[in-house]
Length: 243
View 1 (cartoon, one colour):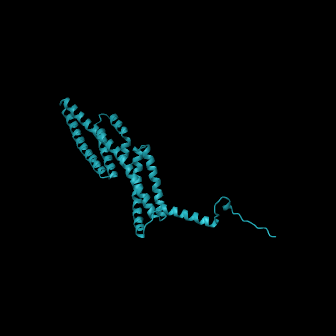
View 2 (spheres, one colour):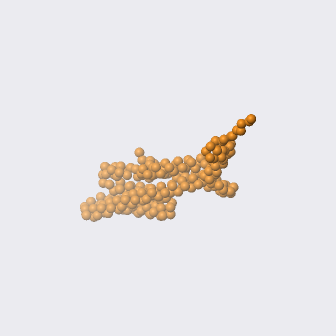
View 3 (cartoon, helix red, strand yellow):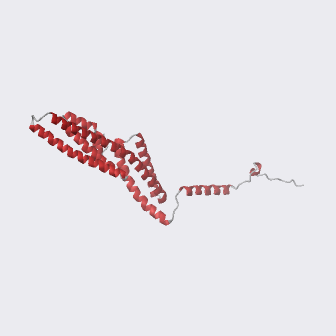
């Protein structure tokens, strides 16, 4: 007499059909591949060719703009600006790696976002430069008016000294006109979203204004105070990090 045997699978014990381990691995692999495909942009051969060209061009532009931003943020950036610049630099590296790995569509997507982030940061900084330039030039105008009124109230007892003061005031009036021209150019470029150009002209406006304030200061001590007060602006105007 033979005993009947019953085979019970693990799957049946838990009320589930058993899976072949090999089939399970294949399923997991396919799922992983599908997830990876979803994350990577997909395009035609022509899309990829255009993406390569655009990504290479963007990479060069971004590298140059980050260098410029490093000086501006180091001189006038606040905590949030520095964090934003750090994030921009990290994402640029990410996009560059994708470019080197020939993942051109992915690289272009990342670098396009970096370009926007740079523009947003430049917008914040351009507003700050615009405000500071306006403040400095307003001080110049006030100082010139005070000097002219003061010269008229003193009379003409010393004609030589009065002539020298008058010539200095005329020279600084011309400088102030040039400074306001630079400020207006900065405003024009800012309205056109040419933000780095705007910052460049705001820098020049500030430099002209600071030079006027130094020239109008009475003593050497007063001149040195003006230079110390605007030490960062003077370095920044030369595209240097102030130390």
